[in-house]
Length: 104
Image 1 (cartoon, rainbow, N blue to C red):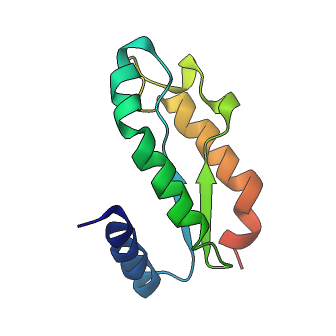
Image 2 (cartoon, rainbow, N blue to C red):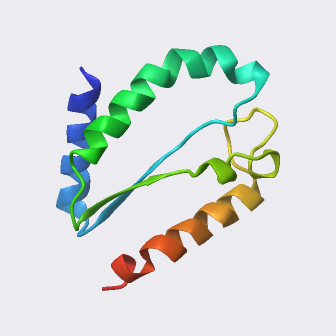
Image 3 (tube, helix red, strand yellow):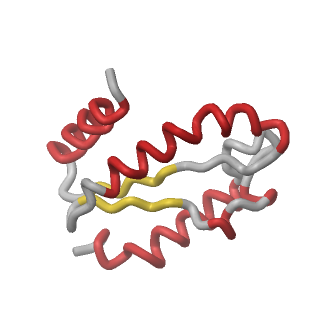
């Protein structure tokens, strides 16, 4: 199954269950230990963002983590999973940018 097919399936399911969908595209912290993994996934990340940007609508929102989010205190030591602080900052980002969409 191609990446675009997988995205289409996810979006179809969310459209059936919810009025609005917010897709938060995760990005790992740029650390030396995640360099090989990031290089492997870069083409997929770029492809996913391109596909998702073509699907944006009033009912589908894409959030990409800004560069200033990519800092040590937002991630666990693995550089992939978020800390409590990272989750808090992500929640604030969602609230700041999209609260008007969440509550209409």
